[in-house]
Image 1 (cartoon, rainbow over the protein chains, first blue to last red):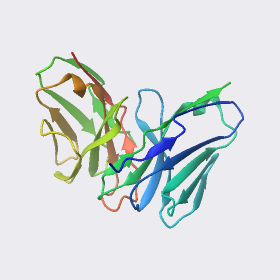
Image 2 (image 1 turned 135 degrees about the horizontal axis):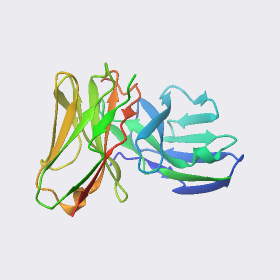
Image 3 (image 1 turned 180 degrees about the vertical axis):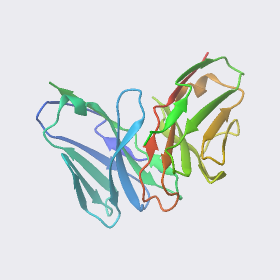
Amino acid sequence: SQQGEEDPQALSIQEGENATMNCSYKTSINNLQWYRQNSGRGLVHLILIRSNEREKHSGRLRVTLDTSKKSSSLLITASRAADTASYFCATDGNGNQFYFGTGTSLTVIP
Amino acid sequence: KAGVTQTPRYLIKTRGQQVTLSCSPISGHRSVSWYQQTPGQGLQFLFEYFSETQRNKGNFPGRFSGRQFSNSRSEMNVSTLELGDSALYLCASSWTGTGGSYEQYFGPGTRLTVT
């Protein structure tokens, strides 16, 4: 399976703290994307990082990519209660075929 | 721009029945992908349509099928429903259809329960 894995599976932090979640994948990629999903809803795209990029920022989000280790990390700084959600990484397979990781469930306690 | 819409939002079916789910992509998007999400298996890719043609297919049995119309709207059909088909079915559309260098816009999903 090309499916990625996020680590940790669940994370609970206090509001204002930083949250870091990791994603590992198995095959070479063109791009890696991170998505957020609120309970039982559709996914929302957060950020895309290309295989030739090592780091990318978007607001309070920082994503790193290490293709040699086939891993990526998502850092959310100064977390808020509204950041409570599940976070998924997705890697591209053949054309438009995406492989999603197992997800990290983040709870931010007010 | 209106987002991706999926109908119906909730559905309860009985084993052995068939079901059709509908997805309307964002205007201008020609690629539509379908995913099945369950607690045990996570998000699994079903298939992707681009300009009315199925371009990619995941590892699902032939009971799962789909199609795309000329206006890019897509339907997926599941025949002979099994209890294990209970899941959240997500549709996603994107602007282009090549290279994986684009973001996908997801609909809210259809929650299918098979009893």
